[in-house]
Amino acid sequence: MGMLARIKKKLLGGWTGIKIKDPVLGELYFYDFEDPKRNYWEGAGTYVNAHLTVGLAVHADFNGPSEQHRQFFLNLVSDLDHLFRRCQKKLVPEWEAWCDATFPTVWQSEFTLVHIMIPTNGDSQNAWEVTFEAKSELNHLFSVYFQDNEAIYVTVDG
Image (cartoon, rainbow, N blue to C red):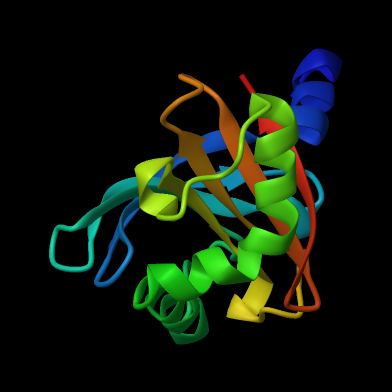
């Protein structure tokens, strides 16, 4: 491997060509980094009886997601209202500042869940995140980052 390829792998990782079909998380593709702690699986699919289409990143090794990863995902998507309440304290003020408006009473009228990053070992004490797409601010993504199972900050892309 040439120097440029090694630098690229170290910084950006790369799709390995390895693909699996997880019984819960669907089709996933493995991304490999020089630092194995950064390795992850990526996919997108329709879940929860076809009511939710969401992108996924699963922090797991070459062996793929564990039962703990699957359970973390299932617990999260089993009650999206509860998930939003966990994000609300950090997310709503950020949205209101960005949009210069009062947040709607019904969160689903403004946000769609579009991505979940499942933490290492499926352990909510590790870093994880969820991303919502705003409906009134087209192409704006609001990502809520968690550590020790608490929302700690929000970023906005778009």
